[in-house]
Image 1 (cartoon, rainbow, N blue to C red):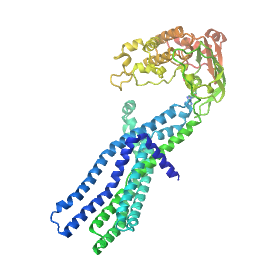
Image 2 (cartoon, protein in one colour; image 1 turned 120 degrees about the horizontal axis):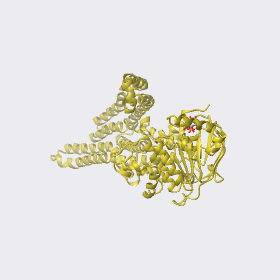
Image 3 (cartoon, rainbow, N blue to C red; image 1 turned 90 degrees about the vertical axis):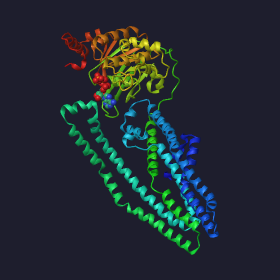
Image 4 (spheres, helix red, strand yellow; image 1 turned 135 degrees about the vertical axis):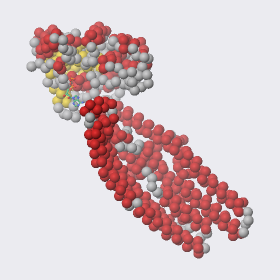
Length: 617
Ligand SMILES: Nc1ncnc2c1ncn2[C@@H]1O[C@H](COP(=O)(O)OP(=O)(O)OP(=O)(O)O)[C@@H](O)[C@H]1O
């Protein structure tokens, strides 16, 4: 029953191919599957007419044969026509079915509010399965399964037609040929499914080999490979993995080859008795030569129709992908987004929010270790708040919680008094603009890279220019061959690669563009780590002067930048341990003052002034 339900699911998937191509494809497959039986009938017609003409002594054989020959030719032409259209129609249907499926899966995953779900290793495996990731051994898609299902149904019709031809001589010929043909198919299907199991295991193992294969040929590792001379060592590793991975597969293939005689035996077991029976009937005069011809051809065609094909594999694999999609949907359903509302109209953003972290504790689901412990923090409307702390203190984590990418384990974050967990994520994120520490370098044009800051709105070149000027990007743009239209990747035609610092300016421009289009809380997580001291100083002066009513949260290791903030908080041991202006914290004489003193001393001696290089006692 479950098998039938799964098959029906595949049939429903076919609807995405749209009615006309689906109808044409079904007709073409039916014609194709009927060709063997139709050929048998047409041959019988020809032989019968010729036989009758011979009995009557007709001289003009051509006149007698012309009609059966025309029928025979029509069958062959129809078969060729069907064959010619099947492949393009299947490709069209597959593109539509898989296109819809992949879009659904992509939307499903991208629509989750938090990234905790997407980081779950189980969910990542399900995403790869649901997207039928070929590089991971999922080599069949829902379209492959659905189309195979259609082909299989057409084959059954073809088999029924061949059985009808057999039954025209005698009903018992049907089970005599059909049973061995069906047994032959079952054995082949079982062997093939086992082969697939071994092949899948081999693919998992081959992924290990891939690590070495890719490392051996990639330019990134190429430097080490050559300098340390471990190319042979890598290739040996790769081959070891390949041998181990494929051991089971090769043994199974060997076994299948040795046993291939079984198929010849089964075919003989089905056809020989039937052919003998037909020959005897014809010799006795109980059957005409025409019927005998039809039966001989139809018997063979039954084996052809039910013969080896990849349909069963395609069907099983297609169902596997659909089941993975169901599991993915269920896994993500627990974290379904809150009801979504209308985004605020652009350029009427409202005031900056008051954000409060109230006794927030958090640890990443993958490790469980507590990163934040009962943390209290207020981000006041319009203030420039700096967060400092040593490496790993949890600063970026705090920002991810603020963006709603993770939910606190306990405590809550409120926005103007409303729990963030109850806010529409789209509405909240429209008010936020963040430069993440590990920002992404999109291989798009410079304009698109900035306009992504508010991708749901048509780009506004005036605001893009203004954001670029604030981020200090103007000089970089002047040097791009096509200005704003230059792709920011050398792998694209006419594209260029930017330096780390230049990229940081692009990403800053993106965040500032979002602010100009309505975001009211700007978060900068190490936004200037790659910038030289002078550029950083200029960017920050401009930012501090032009931020208007927007609140700014700045995370930086450079305390010389941080000191410009309205308020500085120190994150230590998962809590805020110090809070105040630069002068207040210096007067307090705590950890911040100690870090600042060490940095200032190092700066005086000509070293850089970043926290991670110094740890207070
Ligand atoms: N996705 C993640 N899964 C598991 N642990 C994580 C993840 N991201 C960060 N961590 C861990 O959480 C802790 C805090 O990391 P976080 O990046 O918030 O620190 P940080 O203060 O921003 O550090 P830095 O100054 O180096 O940027 C670290 O121990 C880190 O290893």
